Length: 126
Image 1 (spheres, helix red, strand yellow):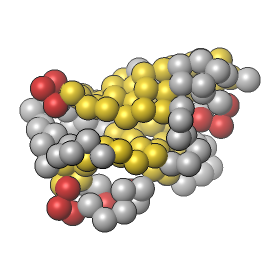
Image 2 (cartoon, one colour):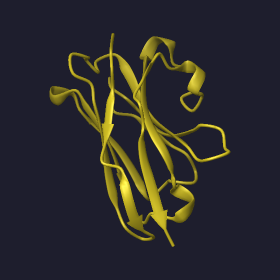
Image 3 (cartoon, rainbow, N blue to C red):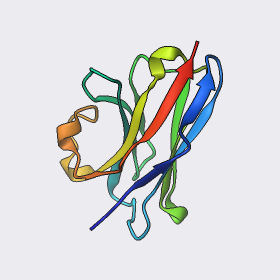
């Protein structure tokens, strides 16, 4: 069974930066879309960003555009989310997820995704 492992979360002050990693040993990112989602307490899980492995096309939620950057290192089977200028409202558990490109329709819909990690906590203090 494929298991994604997120890391890099933590506590940071507003305006700071964090880099999340999503490792997937034995899983090849080729022909998959890799996305990051987040879920804050009492809120629904929301799509943060997505990258298409075949051509590198990226998508971002409006709330993170210009601050977050998604990338992958296919040789290492690892995805990243660089988060800059963090705000208290970015506080959430962050998850990585994957879906075959052929099955991707709405990148920000959690129901599209077959593979998930366990999540990593990001807390931004004001």
